Each structure stands twice: as structure tokens, then as C-alpha cells.
Image (cartoon, rainbow over all chains, first blue to last red; front, side, top):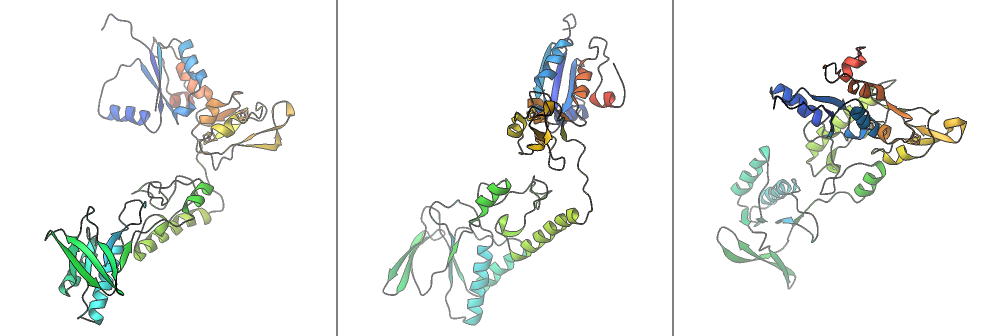
Length: 67
Length: 286
Ligand code: SF4
Ligand code: SF4
């Protein structure tokens, strides 16, 4: 694992479900790679194609909209 | 007295109040005339809480209870001005034929006829049984998800009068919270249209799940032409769907401005200078 390059993932998380789940994961001390960057949105409907493309433009390897 | 009588096609649910009312009537008949024979045909007696005392009292006064099953419902046959009731008792597993002067039916309580049309008019949710559905069963039983609309009593589901009164008091309290204030504060997360950029394409009007945006002629759009979209801040739920869909990018969601969402993404990934939306909003820069 260690010699593999770390993939940079941007996660757009809905405030009410995925972000709350990420919060809960933190509360439970569950580990996830620091290369996953969580960005809270009020609803996955808020995620604009431009936001996804902007993430790729700035070096993200993957984008996930979770909600 | 026959319980749980459901017209064909009606949804199957417990109307909650019928068992108690049947027992109340049975006890009253026995009080007026102890010789009167009262037989209750039931599937399940639901006398919850202290109403269970009515059940005990009815049995003490000699009311007979016979349990029937869904598969073998009682049949009522007219016979020379009287009524014959055929029923199979579940405990004795035997058919009975009862001759009755009166047969009293406990029919299911259906939602009021206008419920569905009113719900459509106000865009309110209905339960599978066709009653109005509250925002949260335990936390907000008198509220709808829609702001400023409240419910109480039998519009919600079949209730006893004291339950309806408590519910109505709660709903009135909620309404007073709105009415007693000169001005209302709304959440800061609302969508705002920049008329200078809006082309009046109606995309936001069609995508908003709550139907909030409208096109207003008194607000000229891009280049001072036509009308532009207007989003009433006190109604907007702040979901941001319209901001993502607007082809002209004319809508911004306060507290979730594009720049607030995109800037964190632009941090330097490899060196960990990624910022959260909050850090960015508080003035930190990558
Ligand atoms: S989607 Fe954008 S451009 Fe179209 S009407 Fe709404 S605000 Fe105006
Ligand atoms: S933010 Fe959501 S609720 Fe508000 S106007 Fe836009 S789509 Fe409708």
C-alpha cells in the first residue's frame, strides 16, 4: 500500500446524511485516509458540475457526491 | 356489536377509538337495562391505557365477547324483521347463530373527503392511509415540513377528543410563535438571484423541489430585458438545487457561495493545505 501514490478524492457530502455519517465515523474513531477531502453541501442537489470539474482541474483523482 | 367492519376496498388500519366507544355503549346499555344481552364480536380489543378498565367493567356487567377471524367474518342475514348473525367463535371453534334486535357496526374512520384536494392545494404530504402526515412522529407531531402550516385532531389520524384537544393546543402554540412576532428571522442559508445575470429561462422555477422561485416582471433581467427570477427568502429551504441548475450561474446560496465551495478544492493537495469551508469563510487562505 505504502509505495502506491495516494489518490486524492474530493467528497461532496450532503449535510443531512453523508456528512452526518462522516461526523459519526469521526465520533466512532473510524479511520479513513486523509487524502479524502470532505466538503459539506446543504444537499447533493447543490453540487454543480463546475464544482466537480474544478476539483479535477486542481489535481483531484476522483470526486464523489454522497447523499 | 361488530367491530372492525371495513367497507370493501378501504385501507386496513385500526381506527383506535371504536373499541372504547363500543364498550362505553355496552356498559351504558347494561346500566339502563341489566337484562339486555350485549354481544361484542371482535378481532382484537384495543382499549389502550386506562381505557382497559372499560373492558374489565363490561365483562363484569355480563357483556359477552366473541372473537372472530379475518378469514371467517360474521355474516348478518335479515329474517322476518329480525337479524340473524352467523359467526364462528375462535376460542370455541364453533359456529354460532345469534338472533339480534339491533346490530351495531364499528366502521373504520376514513379521512375527510376534502383531505386529498386540500393536500394538493397546499402541497402537504399524506400518509398511506390518506390522513395528513406530520413532519416527525415524535418531535414535531403538529408541524408539517412546510413552514407555517400546522395540523391537529382527526386530520392526523383517528383520535379521542382529549387527544385532539392536546394536539390542537400544541398546534395553536406553534401558530402563536409565528403570530406573536412583529418580524420573522429566517435561516441565513437562502438562495439569492442576481437579476443582472438572470436570463429568465425558468430552469430554477422548474427544478426547485419546493416551487419557490418565480419570474417577476418588475425585476428586469440581464441587459434590462424581460423579467428575472425572484426567490422569497422566507420560503426558500436552502437546498441549493437551483444554484447548481441555473445555466447562467445567476443564483448563489448564502453561506455556500461557489467561492466557498470551490476554494477549498483549490488548496494544495499534496502539501495538505486543504481548507474546510468554515476555515475559508473565517478568512484562512491556501
Ligand atoms: S435558472 Fe437562472 S437564469 Fe434561469 S430563470 Fe432561474 S435564475 Fe434566471
Ligand atoms: S435553494 Fe432550494 S428551496 Fe431555495 S429556491 Fe433554490 S431550489 Fe428552491
